[in-house]
Each structure stands twice: as C-alpha cells, then as structure tokens.
Length: 201
Image (cartoon, rainbow, N blue to C red; front, side, top):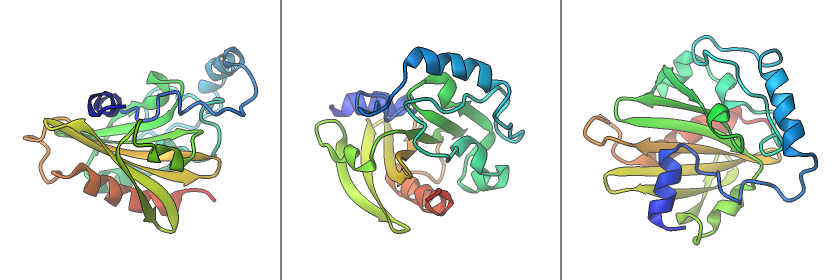
C-alpha cells in the first residue's frame, strides 16, 4: 500500500479497514452479527454523555477480541487533556463495521482510537503500511507507522490489547490551524502512552 492509500485510510480515521483486519479464525456470519448489532445497540451499551450522543454499536466478529471500548473508557477531562474536544466525536463503529472506536477532533486535527481483531505486529508489513517500525510503550510491543501526505500528515500507533489491537491515529488535516501539533507521530506516541495503562490485560 502506497503513501496515498495509507493517507486515505488515515483521513477516514480507518487505518485498519483492509483485508488485514478480518481474522481468519472467526466463526459466525456477518448477517448474524449485523442483526445482533441492531438490537443490542439501543439497549446493552451505556452512554457517555460527555462524548457519544447516539446509540453505540456493540462489538462484532471483526472487533470483539477485547472488552476494551475506547468510546466509553475515558472521561471528558481525559480526552480534553489530549488536546481535542470531547464534544466533537464521531463513532467509528457507525461508519465502519470492521472497526469500533471513536475519533475526537480539534481545530485542524483529530485523534482516533479504533479496535480490530488484528495483531499489532501485522502492521509491520512495509508493503501495506508506510514506514512501519516497532515501538514499546508501557511494556507493550506495538508498531508505529506514518500516513497521509505532506499537506495532511498522519501517524498511527498500534498496541496489543487482549486478542485484538488498538490503533491510536493522529491526523493533521489542516496544519495551519493545528496549533501545537506539528508532528503526528509524536502526538500519537503521547496519547498511546496515556492509553496503554488503561488497556485490559
């Protein structure tokens, strides 16, 4: 995958929506999962008034490898401490069935946290991801890789969590407005360092 393709994935906040996301050993059908999602989305998931305003889709067979839910784990104050606005939130599970998580925006940039049933080490493939390299955060062996382009740079840190991985995605979609955030990899590493201790074992 070239830089342009990775950039498109990052811009969509969806660094894992390729064939690499779908695990080979998952049982069950997509249609069964879809019907479960519709019925459970309105009843089984708690709401966080400081972030989500719509029904939150439950995990499905593409992203049920962990109990961790990035949309429901953090307070508004924690999200704000990363530099983004907790009220400017997009539920990634609504946009893309293969991942779940949330994306919070600020002026000119965003942070996304997405979960997929993919090993973090899978993102070391240089044919699929731009400049991937190992990174260790809080004792977790993860991967950091770049994306986007010169006018909208992005970076993802992928960390293992139970039988899945979480991607910490930083995209600077308007560098002139993204005050204080010039290096997306530095910011992704900073947020991943805050996220790592909150991940279930």
